[in-house]
Image 1 (cartoon, rainbow, N blue to C red):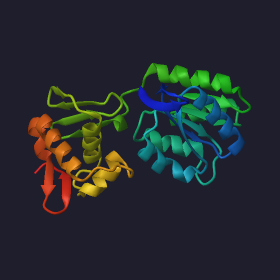
Image 2: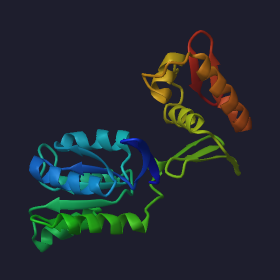
Image 3: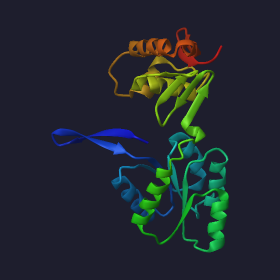
Image 4: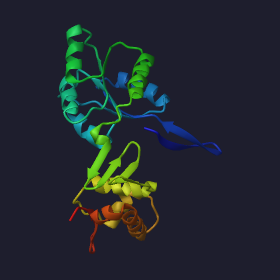
Length: 240
């Protein structure tokens, strides 16, 4: 939360605050679009998928702040998906379904759902429920934190600690460290780091990577030794 986009609006740049990243799991495209449009109007970032089998991989890669989960899905139902997510995360989940019987709602809550919306529903009421749950602030989701050796990284707050000491990093330094900590032991070439952190359209050379790595190591102090230079290959993150 608290992310910011900059949108070109005629002759000036307008700052737009993104409130949350929301994953919508809904196989009815019409309903999914309605939900998506209402949430985007409220400055949320949205990813929408339709097949139950795709949920877990998307959840792990997207790291949403909240999930809107349809119950009746192709290949894997919402109950099972909710159980799988709850086994690794405490991210808020709102179930959206045509099943309105009390037994169905109880089953949803037993699986770990935070709230339940029955079709047909008011999109405005759904948005209000989303905001109410987000306001409670379940920010202790383990997927929002990375820890390796003496380094702790909070993805949502964009904070880094080495031991008890907070380390102030630039945006690119933080993104570099996050990429390394998410992929310990993986060797990244300088060109791949440029693509993943700076983007495909970056026009600078690979020396930019070396400069940022040098500064990042210095800021991390003892933790900087985890970033290892691989001769003629690039860099990897590892506690030797």
